[in-house]
Image 1 (spheres, rainbow, N blue to C red):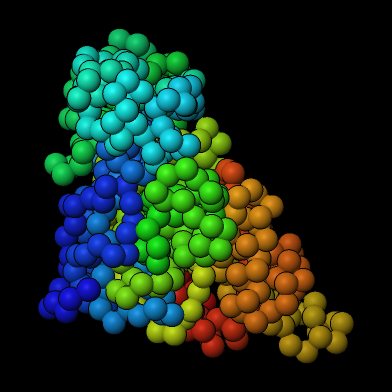
Image 2: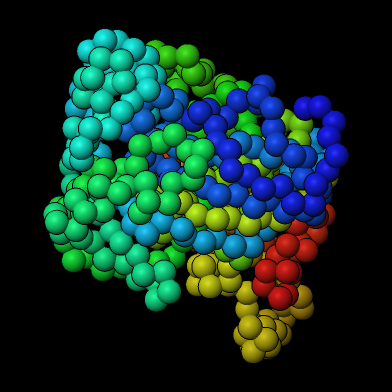
Length: 435
């Protein structure tokens, strides 16, 4: 990274080719304490049906942060998340034709007819056969819906509803407009597929960021910068193959944790100089687990504030969610509850009741058990608490919550304030929860 004058605000409207590559130039740097404002492109389905992209998403070009060195962390305050799409499409996926990819349909797409690797495409009409190879004209999408829907939004009232076939086809004919796809995005809008298996299904909007993090220290497809999707790279038959040991270079920016929304604070590891903050894969809504495999991927405007936390050497993200998102047992005790606890403790001769603050450790792995172990071990190692103690605290004053299947979890518990204070994390908890 060449030295540049720091900016108080960096505006981002450029996207990667689907790969987070630490050897490529970053934008910025943004000043420590400054802001990143990004116009993000939809994740998942659009990039999935765009063979020239080398990952399952189309995230922003990373931004360097002033003073961020390897072994530090970057605190990202999520100031605003605004959906700009008027509609999107999503659903369960299948990859029925193995001739259309090399081992991984998210990463290594190819034309089944002429064999072109990561070919450019053109759209012909609408429907699931609309994506064609620009070289030979063959139908080329590596993914199809098993059950899909097209959904439109009422942003002002915070609701959404799925369309019938007629409505889905109407939207599909103007996919770029309804998706509000940013100008520099190259993805094919998934609206062109016009799925309509769910009709008249209603839900609420609650936007969050499926991708938010820092640049890994080896090239990773953006969708595979996590322990679960990253496991697909081990021994893969394409250029982004990894060993099991090399997965440690990831930063777990692909979380799909619905608590990563406006008002939350995410602490991310710095594994390359400058950190390289990137964002994308905004979702209009999602239940815990993203059990369908995908949700409502949308375009949007994101405002982030960044702060370098010197010397905080972490392996993966730490989250301070919005207070209402905390599990019931992890919520800070009220003044009345604290008084009742002191009274109860006094009856039994317990002189000191510990001071605690909520904290969430993100854990990822090839499956849910591995992700839980990863989150617990990250908490234990950083806080200097034994693994059995962390397990007890997560059980009696916290919770393990699913972020994404097959392997992203949130390990949340009320932690003694002493290790948080020693690590420089206590001010974030105090800021979030008015402790």
